[in-house]
Each structure stands twice: as structure tokens, then as C-alpha cells.
Amino acid sequence: MKRHLYTLCCILAAFVLVFSLAGCKSESDKVKEALRPALESYAHATEDDKKGEVTDPDYGDSETASVLTAYGVDMNKLHELCFARFSYELGDASVSDDGMSATVPAKITNVSLASAAKNASSDYASYANSDEAASAYAENGHKALLAHLFDLLYAHLQSDDTVTTEVTLTLSKNDNGDWTFDKTGNVAFYNALYGGSNVLEGLASALS
Image 1 (cartoon, rainbow, N blue to C red):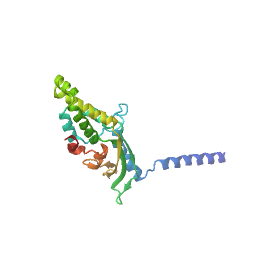
Image 2: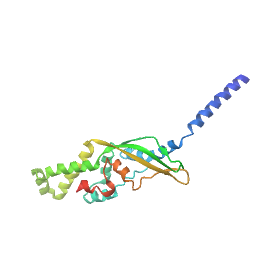
Image 3: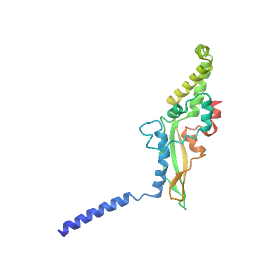
């Protein structure tokens, strides 16, 4: 009886050890865990069944949105197309000596909004002088021409090659000991997010 009791105690002790080790995460692991929800929000931006499970994505494109919305672009549709092929890969986190800040190298893969805009503009330039464009304009005016330009942009967002951009992401620890992703105003992050496109400044060069 004592032998069986000893064996049972050993098994229970093993379980306790396993679970205690599983619950002991390194600070580097905590950093990456804090970062993932923000990045996953873009990865699932187009998946209706996942939208309620992740945080709302911060597109950081208010300047670009103001430019495109003025021309009639549906930003919801644009975001869906921009992030339909988004993916990311995180490297090892590095925590500062004082334990209050951290960096994580990341590879972000996505279609380039700036390139898609330039390619669409190039295609539109060829279309603008065609009989098809003249007919569309005669029927519905500038609205028809703009609609065609947007269709070209959407097509390139779906067909252009994706690019991978390397960027270093920074996080800071708050007073509660939680890690926070410092993305506000982070030009390099948002450039990488849109495949090398400066949405913080409205994509002026790509849309001019």
C-alpha cells in the first residue's frame, strides 16, 4: 500500500512540475505575446468569423484615407484588399537591461499600396485616350472614369507581387507590468504594413 501511495505521489509531483514549467514564461515570450494581437488584427481583417476574436486593426492611414475618400474610394473595401495577403514573422525579442523596453525584429509581407497606385495610374493613362474612355465619359462623366481608375487599383492590389519588409518593433512596459506595442507615429512600421507605402503622409507621391 505504501509503495502504491509513493508511486501516486511521484506522478502527482511530476504533473505539478510540468504545469509549473509551462506557466513560467520568459520576459521575451511575454513581449512577443503582447505584440501578436495587434499584428493578428491585420491578418484577420478580412475574416468575418475572426473579427470578434482579435483587436480592431489600427490602419494608421487617416491622411491617405482623406485623399482617397474625397475621390469616392470605399475605405472598407480598400482595407480588405490591402490585407488579403498580409502575413508576418517575428524574430527573437530583446529586452533592455532595466526591463522596461523591448524590441522585436519582424518581417512583414504584403502587397504594396504605393506600387499598386502607381501601376493603376500607368494603366489609366493608357486608357484615358481610348474610345472606351470617351464612351464612358459621354455616358456618366467623371464618375465613370474615376470608377475605372479605382477598379484598376483594386485589380493591382489583388494581382501585384507581395513584398517583404524588415522592421524593428518597439514595446514598453507600463506600471502594471504589461507590455505595450509602441506603434503610434511609427513611420517604419506603417510603411512595412502597406508594403513600403507612406500612408502616414497620404501617399502623395504615389497618387500625384
